[in-house]
Length: 409
Image (cartoon, rainbow, N blue to C red; front, side, top):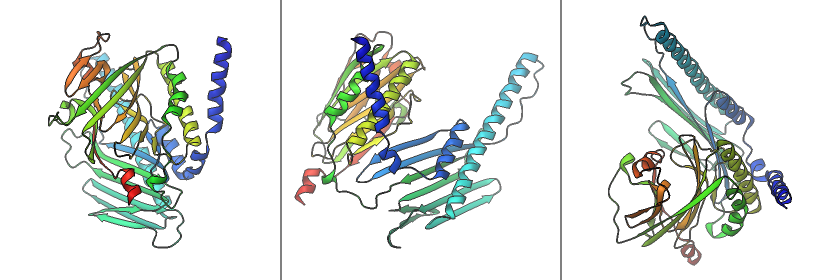
């Protein structure tokens, strides 16, 4: 019976893999962009790729590049072992510098090539005394009329809107660089949306949480995975302290501005894996099942980042859904790792404002500031839990029109 069950589950995953494709096919980016992504990854860089639906489908790609100043080798110390280590480090830095420069050049060359095919393009470069500033804004694709493109200007930056494909690149030399190592930073963004018109929020398909949960549950209940839960409650009787950055008590807070929520509940389930091999396998299965679910549930509000992994000690988002009801609801899946030894998948859902305290690794409940820790988590202190979640913290204020109000307009 066990072999039959495993065989059926393997068949299910295979069918999911086979079924996926329509969304990805519709959002296939240009060959030049795909080539750039492959090159960036070959150089050890990261190309962040995400898919989302906000009335029409989008594929968004973000690529960053860092340039560094040339550093002379460390002077000889007379210690053969130390000098060998210093020279090895110098060669490593040179190699990394060459790779970053290669990514920078590839981005610029891609922008130059695509600007020749653009409906509209804006290019601005400034080079003086070692200070460089570069701006590319490129609107690509076919339009029904010449009025389709909207452009906005902020000083030297131009932003295009309403184009099927928009490519932008911004690079600046660091003006304040006390240690002299980093030279400059650049960011590229590509957004592709094949559909011309947006659907109204009232036409969105609702999130079928029961179906999605049913599909991912077998994956998260495999042997080698443990789970625990936490609960967060907040109402208007509690006021958050005004803290910033790493001193904040929360890894994520997503607050609604309008309408302001008088009561919010967040329920989290933490799935913990001790093996990287199993963690990678589970993540691959989650990606396949999520693709299958999205293909079978089109026109649903979502954001999906299938290339994300356990890269941060904070939280990396894999999947999200947010509703626009009068009392908004949310559903998110995050990834986390602790020293590349413990891998966590965090499923968070609830209503109102989403609140994830920074001690979620050992949390049992947080109710208006009153904390109850999970007594089974004895090997980690609250401070260690905070240290393992401090990266990638996020605070967002979210304003929206409830869908029931829109129906009455």
